[in-house]
Length: 280
Length: 182
Image (tube, rainbow over all chains, first blue to last red; front, side, top):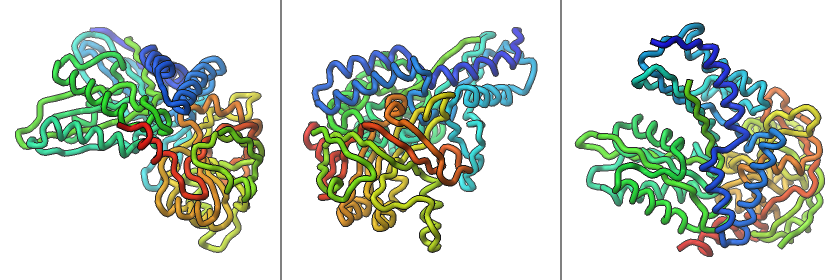
């Protein structure tokens, strides 16, 4: 058994919120830089050049990459041999979000009630997903999620008879409908299988997978490659203003499902696909 | 084609713009997004006075991140325009001449743009740090309680936007899919 002080969690969450909103991971930067070189559409190429410049300004001047600094989505993978000491874990995580968004000059975009809509003024609460894993470490992933792209995400409860083609059509439909609203070039997270909520969570988690990594399942890897190619043939392009860079990656996660179902979730993220990971 | 336009924008300038034009705006523009639109719309329907004279003005759908000390504004890119579609035709009919945002608009908005000789611009989504450099000053003029959603008066200099829907109803988002799609 290993004891972890929850104050350590708070401090790390705070730093990670600030880091995620000012610096993109290397894989996302590589995607952007190579697309800016390869895009043929003049306006599309110009937009990608501006996104590169934007990223540089964000890091140098400490201005968030995007003004929508998101709702903080946090994955907590907790080793089963960890013992927490201090505040209630959930409070400690939210305190980290509160300090990160306040001290880091990040936008407060969370309303307390979905219908009354009063801003909580500190961007809490976060959406926290807990997972118990082997070991005595805590792996925290912070993925602030903007809602331009979140609003364009979809769940399709397909029939088993819809099969592989049905899944591909669902993903392409979601991407076409999203178009310029989702701030392309996008990253497309897909969950296939499980239940209604399981496939949505898989799609969300798929967005945190490095953009240059494919599924370990050969036929799913093929589907990821085919869908990326077809999405980039839609013509939507950077900012929806035309070109061949509509998505940087399609990441698919799968899970066993019921004999009667084929759930498919498509969680779309904009080009500011933020995620920071720390292991404590 | 690159164009340089002064804001508030004249009716003549607005009508002359074409979908696909790259435009640099200089002058005064106003921010308003979801909550401010709802409040202004309700005030308008109740016959009240709006905190902002819409005539000839441009509304930027934007809620900034907080400014650090010594800076005019924080990150300041566009939000998705379609959430404002419900309110936009009435605003256009009351004199609003342009909107800056990102993403698709409804048929009703497009018709109202044509009817009023207005224009819909896109700014690059997710480029809020870069766009903040073209904003020279920012002042909250109404609905301060809405925080980031308050109405702000911005002075902009060569603020880069692209014409998506022009006064003839041409829509760049639709034409590029035909042009670049396979």
